[in-house]
Length: 120
Image (cartoon, rainbow, N blue to C red; front, side, top):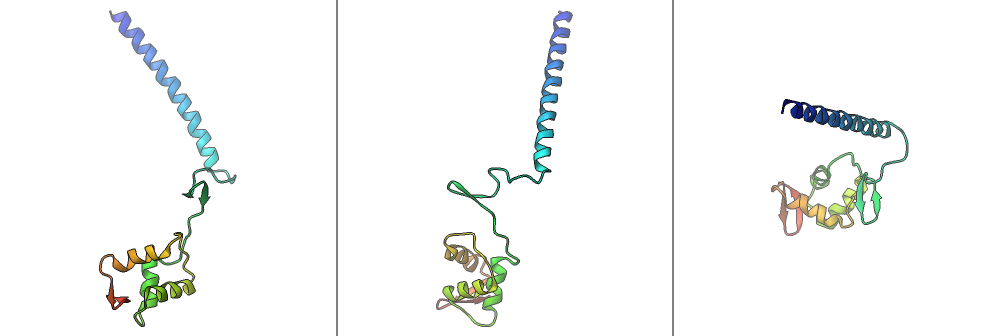
């Protein structure tokens, strides 16, 4: 019985050593790809259907942009979108009004007076 336990231990240990070596080799391959300046990896970025889209980085958040353009006077949604566009803000959405609505109506940070918005 002791012999069977010893054989089982040796067999399991060898299997774990083999698996560890395979994992270390795969990790080395991953590190090589991540540290190279090669082409972008598939699946990186925002996916829209069958094409990958690079994520847009703006200097300020949408909330801050809305706060800036509405600080002097209350504006309608379309006026806000036009003013934000002049600031250089880029939307990643195909429908920027949805993103604007999320900012305007969340957390009561903007007040709505007859369709014109200003900071609360």
